[in-house]
Image 1 (tube, rainbow, N blue to C red):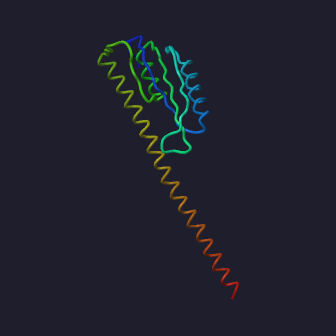
Image 2: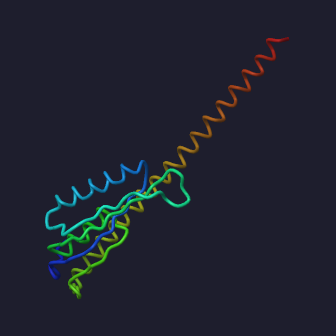
Amino acid sequence: MAFEDTRNIHAVFIIEVLGKPPEHLTEALEQIIGRIKEEKGVQISRYKINEPVKMRNSEEFYTNFMEVELEFGHIEKLVGLLFKYMPAHVEVVEPELIALTNSSWTEFLSELVRRLHGYDEIARIIQNEKVILEKKLREMIEEKNNVKIIKSDEEDLDED
């Protein structure tokens, strides 16, 4: 993609993680910052990793987030990082106006649709695999129950 219409974009991402134990969440956010630092065409102005907090309605899971101020050479990098890191929130600070040509919009929207189709395909595969696993599990449970019934019948015969 070549979005050459808009350059020098300043944005803020909020990236959130969920899991346990809480110290792993901080480590995960630090790893994400490390990967962002290696991205070409992206500068980190500042970032702040917060302390993990226990999730409401959960005894074991925690959540944590960080705020990252970024500067991008091109809007293409901003869009790429949105897909790569899936922030919970994005705010474009500047420029005030981002103008794109219709060909740039076409490229952006085509890439968006391509990625959505990819995610949809993955979701369908996982759903099909889930159905197959559930079927195999039911078969295994039925097989195990039949073995118990057969053993029980054999034990009854031995007593006679």
